[in-house]
Image (cartoon, rainbow, N blue to C red; front, side, top):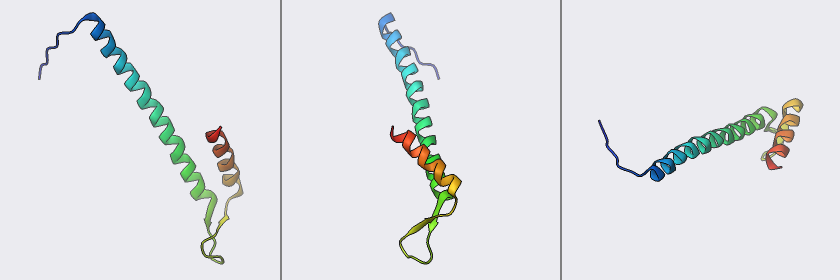
Length: 77
């Protein structure tokens, strides 16, 4: 498929800038989604349902819980 477009130099520069911005924001979105995924994974590794107390959770891995707390503080800062 061939597409021919007529545009001014200014329009072309605007189009190129839009493409760069699009790539930039996609990479930022990917990084943000990766952070959220890691927070969710750390949560699953750090806590689990408490079988003795329905509706409650307990820390099952202190190291992951500490890392999760640190990551959450950084995320919210």
